[in-house]
Amino acid sequence: QRKRVRELEKKVEKVAPRAGSDPLRKRLAPDQLSVGSTVFVLSFDGAGTLLSTPDNKGRVSVQVGALKVTVQADELFAPDPMPQPPAADSRRSREKRASASAPRSAELAPVPLQNAENSVDLRGFSVDEAIQRIDKYLDEQLLDGRLVVYLIHGHGTGALKRAVRDYIKNGELIRTFRAGEPGEGGDGVTIAWLNA
Image (cartoon, rainbow, N blue to C red; front, side, top):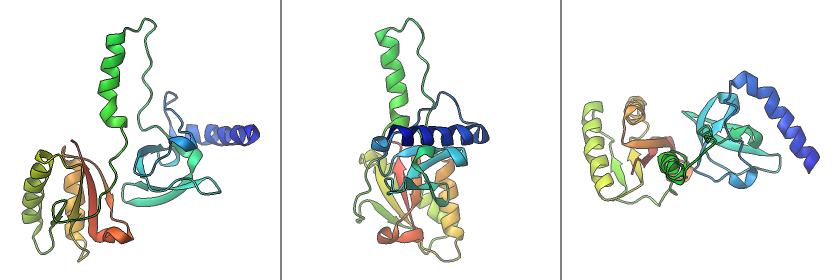
């Protein structure tokens, strides 16, 4: 098993310069990989959402932006570079750093079953109407303490879907999002995690 670990480390060292990865970034062990968590994908030089645990060949599925890709688990790193502690580290500064990094590195909430409270239907609305509806809906959900919501835009021409995803990608209320899985409404639904 040690031989296998060394082989994996060599592979990562080969691709690391190509991806321009930060030497402070922490590689994730297989037992640290949980579905729904945010990971840094070395070959894409960006963050994504983990969709599966490693298979028997060490491969995982990751949602990177609009792409659903399969990569080797040894390409996955913690989403944020690890902070470098100063030589003399007080308890207060450690706690301050921990609280500042907690929301960014915390795991994503599990996706609940879809119901009337955690979903908003945007089908049939113009882009402007849909955006206004999303704003009002997200404000209400944040007040209710909800963590995950379903934005139902359907397929249609794809214009509404693109507008919805572009809007929430650039907003401050949404932490991350992904397309629905087949049992969740597929690509006609966007599942979003709120910045609670």
